[in-house]
Image: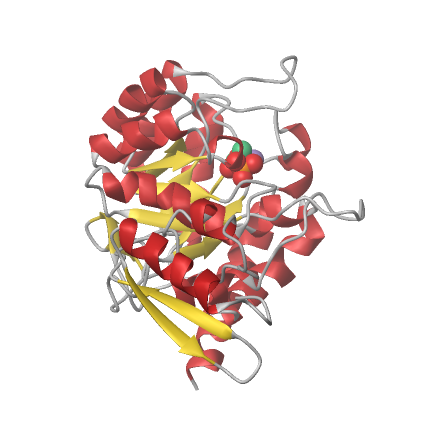
Length: 332
Ligand code: PEP
Ligand code: MN
């Protein structure tokens, strides 16, 4: 309450809080009176209270999301996308592969390189959300068939993006984990659809989304009964054009504190520049990431999307070795 709020004003707020169905606990202080609201099991719509005479400010102490919060579930969630491939446990899974599936030869070659280097899962978009409608849009259903072929040969589980409700069902037939891209993080209809489908979901942070926005989007999936959600920090828009995005490393420990869901780092989209990928991959792991998703292309110079940020095969192999060293170092 404002300094100098009258007893009548305090009583009026208490009455309105009770009318809304909650308990009101006035706490008189030397400067002003605070009124605690208890008995709510979620965020209270504060608009009615904020407008009352004598009210200074509304301070939320509970989070707007529920099932994704650590308060709801203190122990960390482990998401298993295929036998032996889990996020949020003791392993450091690395999802790797090209930005897009381009051809049978390209995706099979990619899968072999990922498997040989010790990568854990294969990525590659069949449906591509491109900023320009004139850019390569992906091979669609044909791309999904090629991913299935790559899994059959290498045994690597598949992570691939769904862009709309119809596509989500097609993707679910092949994918071990359905990716929701940054541009679709707030496509609530799609979030509900993948929530209902029930397969593991990799939910990427929108490029202008706050951590609260990301967690609320995850809440949509959990609220449909699907708790298999892996979050992903992939960089946010910034004022500085020297990198494609600003890779927000702080998001990793922040999410760990607020939520029980695992979070992986995407240093490829996070930086947009190949020579920045390895340093930021190491950093993400050191910051506590539950795994990584990295773009690697057998021939980045001829990639149909995101070639500039795709690692060369030998760079990817070197990265896997370094990540092991980082994992050992931070456990020490
Ligand atoms: C991708 O993973 O290739 C992609 C399009 O990522 P984002 O949605 O993070 O831009
Ligand atoms: Mn990409």
